[in-house]
Image (cartoon, rainbow, N blue to C red; front, side):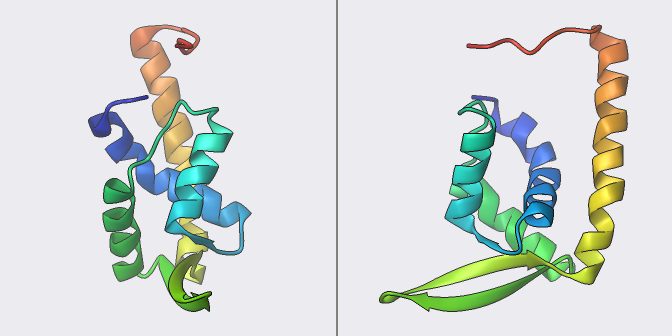
Amino acid sequence: MYSRELLKGILKPIILKLLSEEERMYGYEIVQKVKEKTEGRILIKEGSLYPTLHALTKEGFLTTESVLVGNRTRKYYSLTKKGTGLVAPTMQELSDFQSTLSLLFGEQKPAVS
């Protein structure tokens, strides 16, 4: 698992990317999808996820829909048009950043623990 500080900076791109692939997702589903896709290497705490989801919603990048599931209300998040427009530039910025880091640290494969 990576440090909270490292994950904090990457959480927004992770959310945007996942929601660009799925029509809508709820918080726990995002946590589980990240865990599945990264083979358990990235574990997002819900305490870190929800403030980011709320910030993205407040900024107009996400919209929410509350759905009654059983006896509980589940809040689904989806990209707005503004959020969809943010996905490609964010992915490009992340790719550029990865390239810059490889200049600094050299071409290294991620350690598998």
